[in-house]
Length: 304
Image 1 (cartoon, one colour):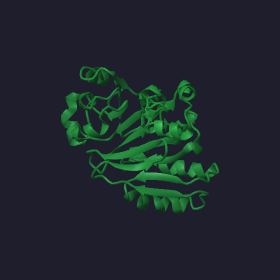
Image 2: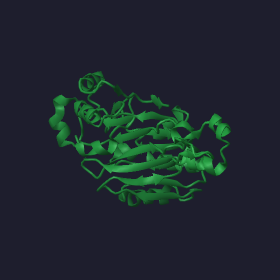
Image 3: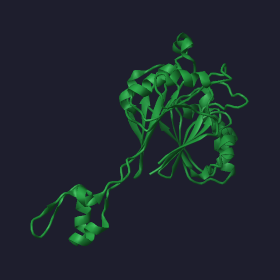
Image 4: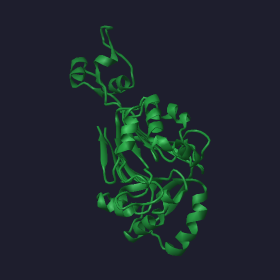
């Protein structure tokens, strides 16, 4: 099991000379998911050698420009590259009305279908699921309807120990039953505990994305114990009043959420352009939650 997150953009509102607006590519169980699509996303995808054809789902947290202005260009490029597989965009219902005129004018001959999957913002919901991955959306608190995303690997079945198959001469139906949690009963009536017969798989990995949002404690039970949390940290805590007015978070507030949710590791991003040096945000957060890292554009985080 493995999870890989590449930061394509880490800035808020405006691009700077070294920080693009928000976009991330998440690879989990061999699936590639694009999270938000700020200006310059396709350039960053190329810079990080991401295969465009692998991206079948885009998740947009909300409809502010710094999170979606790269979308129409990316859709057009997909078409020019001869894409034929459908592309599903998970976003606010308003996106289709906003984007369709652009698709009709600039992309009328797309060789693939764009599918709009509407998000809701009242409670956590499963928005994507297959045999290996489940994705949930959950409400955040911003100036417009906004949600975060939780990506979780599904647990794998335990593996039967080879020596156990040989020792007890296990049949295929018996192996299936043991994998499903049953103990084994031998011909002599001996009960062999399932734990003695199997090797447990690695613990499934999880990633949560929280941007943009004010300090919002309702996310804590949703993201409890995740392996990796990305949480916006637009401002230092000395600007907490500004953060509240603009519905953003401070680094200290992000760290407090991470601590109380008992996550394994916190990533801070969505930095205000006022900060050329963002290291003070890390210093502030680490006073609350030591396992904190500031993200940088083109940086990859891997969990195994």
